[in-house]
Amino acid sequence: MTAVLTKDGQLPLPRELCEQLGLAPGQALEICSESGRLVAWKKSASDPFEKWRGRGHLPTGKSGDEYLRLIRDGDRR
Image 1 (cartoon, one colour):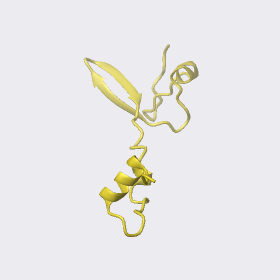
Image 2 (tube, one colour; image 1 turned 135 degrees about the horizontal axis):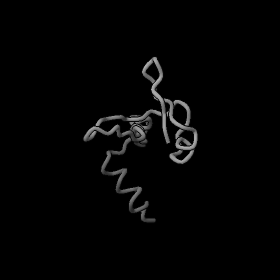
Image 3 (cartoon, helix red, strand yellow; image 1 turned 135 degrees about the vertical axis):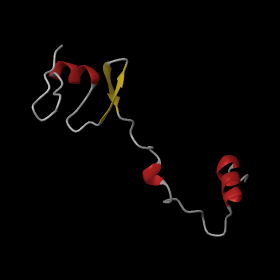
């Protein structure tokens, strides 16, 4: 496949390549040069748990260790 650099310095990727790689409009790519070759890969998504950090709350009156013991062992009734 061949892609031609635009006068604005953009490199449009062929549609077939985007479909093969599962690239969608707006997809971020990391790009570097290795031994004179252009190398690109999908940019890693941020930590999938990041949006949940700080949202959980311990039950009132429980320490972290007590809560972990409860969810791991149950209430031992």
